[in-house]
Structures are given as structure tokens and as C-alpha cells.
Amino acid sequence: MAVDPPRSVVLNYDQEQQRLTVKLVEPDKLAPLLAGLFEVPILLDDFDFRLDDEFARRLGVAMLNAIALGHPDIKQYMSVTQKPIDRE
Image (cartoon, rainbow, N blue to C red; front, side, top):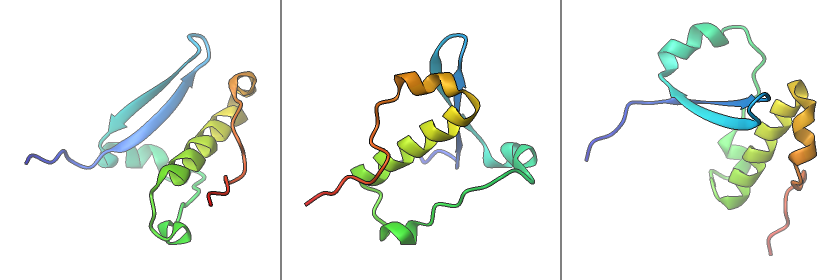
């Protein structure tokens, strides 16, 4: 089975076209652009190494909130739960 090389994911909001785009880029090519930028680590240990539906939902909400910092107009489209959803 062929395995793709490692990729970083770039999520961008195009305000003019009102769309989100996802781009895959080789980490080595992206590294010089990211040097010295603000970084928010997400420690898998904090989530018991469970990349489940709730983790994915929270990650998505965090990404939308980060985009909304620079594009507050996108908030009008967001109707997401900000806090973790209690699963019983």
C-alpha cells in the first residue's frame, strides 16, 4: 500500500468568495513561513490520545474561531457549540 508523504494542512477563508479552502503542503516548504509565528500546541495526551468525533468537532470550532479573529464577518455563519459536548 502506497503512503503519501507527510503533509501540513492550511485552512483559509476567502471573504470575497465566501468560502473556506483547504490546502496540503509539504512541512519543509511551510516551515520558513511559520518560523517565529504564534503557536498553539494541542497535546494529544490532554485528550487521552483519542481523536474521536468530539475531538474533531472541538478542533473544527477552534479553527473557525481562529479565522474569525481576522474575519469577524464569518461569525454570522457560525452556530457551533463553543464548549465540549457532554457524551454519556
